[in-house]
Length: 395
Ligand code: FEO
Image (cartoon, rainbow, N blue to C red; front, side, top):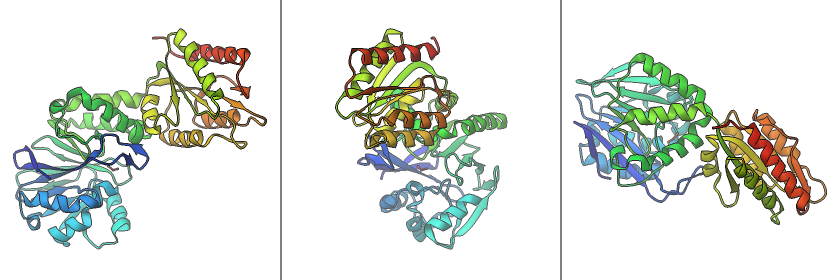
């Protein structure tokens, strides 16, 4: 691990996880990083740690700057184990009695993860900690995305250590936004869609309250991916836009198929939607990863789900996707269901039930075709596609 001085006497120590491809169900085709920050002041302060398997790498990185024993304060902005797994090793090296600052929920959650009697110093929202020449202000960000989550703000340098927020699952040699420019945005967008989408209302409130506080930002330092120093406002503006979830004239036809009948129905619907000027895309659930589909869901106005009836129920990949999407609570979507069946045909009703639970605007009872769609079946799919197009905003 090579420490990088991001500002005078402030270092980023990034453990680069080049090979991770599945981050608890999220596809990370380009790996990720676990970023830790070290501030050298009268009180030497470490912010967050790394996943357990990178703990020795972190100790080595710190040792290139100072003896870890010289660290006075450890801060945990978030308990999830990709940032706290290295904490037992770090506390052992730094000194088990050193103050460990975290939110009140952080103390509860860390205690339940590591069963250690560390010297917890729970902090309050907007509480301050003097490091000597600099001061850290703690900002609780409950449920963004865990109850323990908080930000730490270094006011003299105008640096916000934002934990998971504004991060990206991206492993590369770049450490700053100006080194990668817009190529980082698809990673930031996917991260938002899969991790933060359900907290959109809280994000809008947080941005309002940070604006109200007049918090100035020269640098935004998340715990994953690159640091925003050229234009921290850009990712904040994007978060506001993504949180608003304004539906576009865009439709996703998300489906699985056994013998290509449901696929044929999906194709007819996509074709009809395209003829109506809708940006329509078929997404086969065994060809597209659920986390990539959710990234597309973010600004889609219509979500159309297709499943064959399989053992009186849904095809398993369709159930998986609906469960995933329901948890992320996308809003303001037009919804519809379709699918081929052999004899019982429950799938369309089961999809409709879930779309209604998600408060989608289900504009049609749904379309079932027995076995293989004939000309009439294909025409019914085209008609449904046109009906969905009519329900979408014009652009
Ligand atoms: Fe990167 Fe919520 O952990």
